[in-house]
Amino acid sequence: MVRGQANPHVARLRKHIGDVQLTTGDLLDQGSLISAVERVQPDEVYNLGAISYVPMSWQQAELTAEVTGMGVLRMLEAIRVVSGVGQSRTPGPGQIRFYQASSSEMFGMVRETPQNERTPFHPRSPYGVAKTYGHYITQNYRESYGMFAVSGILFNHESPRRGAEFVTRKVSLGVARIKLGLASELRMGNLEARRDWGFAGDYARAMRMMLAQDAPEDYVIGTGRTQSVRDLVELAFATVGLNWRDHVVQDPRFTRPAEVDLLCADPKKAREQLGWEPEVGFEELVAMMVESDLRLLSSSSRPEDEPLSPDHW
Ligand code: GDP
Image (cartoon, rainbow, N blue to C red; front, side, top):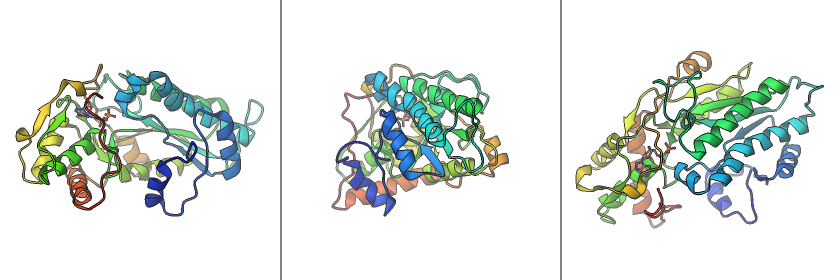
């Protein structure tokens, strides 16, 4: 689903999705979602739509709540209304299955490590708060109406297609630029933050497995390993034979008003019930991203998105 008039992202999407049909709709517009569900008559709906860059959520907190939070409610309502589900009628076999992209950012200031499906939430950004609403409303529609609605609590998942503002891609692009002599330094925020980074392709496979189960349940998806931003930077520079200490400059403009210090998944349930295992490890992921950006910057084309300027977190 794409929104807006002459949306510039469509041409970029086309390169990746071939002849997949796009339909119009907007998470801010209930009627457009009802029309989209009516038109497509889907078997499955995956809601990955969100304002997903955490620093942006402080700058546009209300819009983040509307898109990332209320957008989930509107999508569920569209499915409910088109399916004719209500208090007097629960969905039967063949109902539309709904996947909500919940986020490890909901754990925020973590209460325990590693984090599993029962770990309490303590979000640390307007983004995390909005995702927490989306998580609970998905659970509530499952419990209220018997809808097949599930949340995947996905930890950070990355690939060469990651937006340039996120830390992994910022680092892989930065390393490639420095290696090719296009830049000499990389300005970074908090190097001590720890994340459980995995490969997006593995995580997309998990989403599909969740909707293929007999019963709707929520799952934590992550690798169970955690690395610091410093580890990421060190490894990425080492991949091209450079020492990060010669190039990385810490810049307080990239430090956030409230930070999520540590995330590490406990993916036991997904392993045992879905048979899901990540196939790409951290080292392989970082090498894949750096090599991809070296190729991209060496070719005549330029990255599709430039990183945000340093006045952004
Ligand atoms: P997030 O976990 O969804 O917020 O994903 P990001 O990739 O944006 O950030 C991951 C972690 O990297 C956060 O703890 C950031 O504070 C930290 N970090 C340190 N320096 C930077 C930077 O320059 N850019 C970004 N995006 N993150 C940084």
